[in-house]
Length: 94
Image (tube, rainbow, N blue to C red; front, side, top):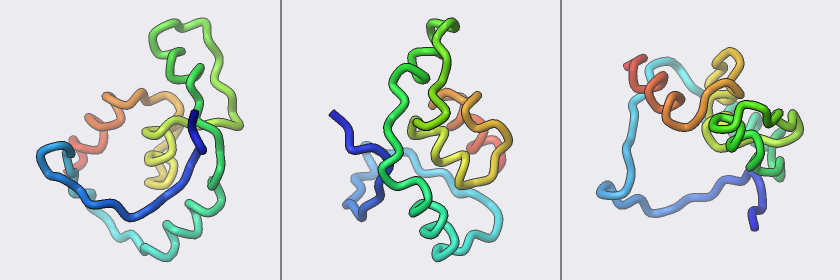
């Protein structure tokens, strides 16, 4: 179903994406090295469902997309953010 964490260049259609400018100094090379540490980490479907059904525990060996992004941006406890709150947290730091 899912190959896990990966990155690739894609063509963005601005009608389908929201872009957030993130303040701070980010070195693309450093980010890519950090991404490489997580390549092929499986997607945490149960962890994502856990935001709705609180009894589900997250698998620490898996991640969901917002958790991965917040990890790269050095947020504390990125596993606590579901995708919508991750977006709001990043957007509020403009």
